[in-house]
Length: 78
Image (tube, rainbow, N blue to C red; front, side, top):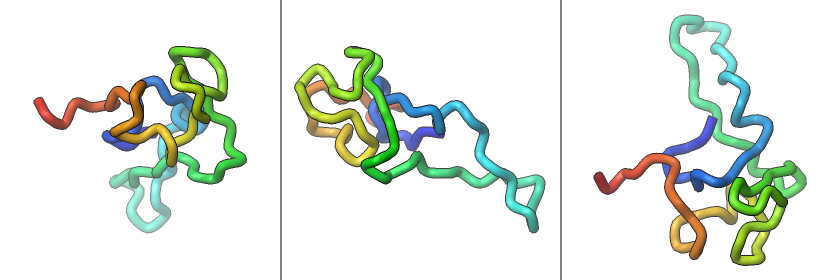
């Protein structure tokens, strides 16, 4: 699952899996942050490559607000 401030165009296989349920509280799913290891493969939906349109690597730690091609997953300003 993505965090609200993650880039809309950032993709990773982990984003497609539901978060695990906690063993002690099966009725409350916990939110799992996307992988943050630089070795985790991610790609950009705009380029369909591991490099974004600005020539920088596509990764959760790098695809942040302030980057020229960034578009928030959720528009928190609305």
